Length: 352
Image (cartoon, rainbow, N blue to C red; front, side, top):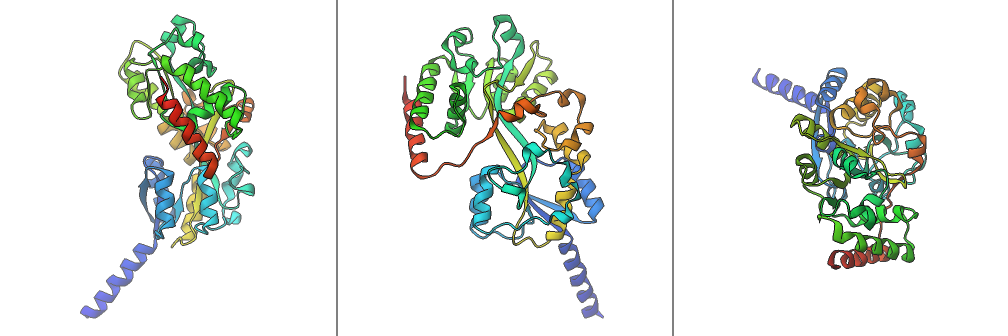
């Protein structure tokens, strides 16, 4: 009898383990209520594991980590995942909600035809700013000139921070000069470097870590950073009842775009549940919940109807057709090109 009971418990335990979906993702990147609804819908459990960077995720999977079903990489990480045979082609027949994806976010340079990936959410790199202060000074934040033009910077000297990120800052300087954010032309890179060096004395700091807080308390008036962070800063300022208003906007010269995508791993223990999850997340209401929670950009056309009105009008979350044409996903740099950018970055950081 004891053996029979033990065998029953083993079978029950195995069944429970099999009805589990393992998701490898950024932290705080699925709304809790969405997870609960999926668990109820699929009668399964969702277990999440988190990474802090694409490099960390790629290194772990490349080293042979198994047990995950779904991973959510940024665009440039898709090619290495495909090249290393770490992901499987999507079964579109199981993704009835694929039709909800905004066509502008499909067929990227990283996965032509979306054979392996489907857009989940995105961020843009842009400028957040103290709208109250900039209005007083007559400064327009709709151009990269705010952080690069000395004539504009004279009015806000010492109140500007830029990302401590060579790729993002050079991309902004390239676009300001009328070039592609993905340019690898040496002359265009040199011009971008000169633009940065000229503007640098007017900046308070290179800051990737604390610009949300600095904006929220009013220590800085303009910050170069990510749209999700600017949304948080705006909400924090409102909650603290600051006497100023924070806002953020895309720049007329263009902005960089980071699209995160859902992919099913080659070794997924439950590829069936993985496809159910992907399809579930492509439902408009389900997709809208992350946007409502963290202000993430949304590539799902069906989500618009469920997004809070105050978020729906933000161009960084739902860019119009003209703005979409100016959004550029950054390619990965390797070899000589990467070494050249690192060299220019060192010159920029050490320039006085």
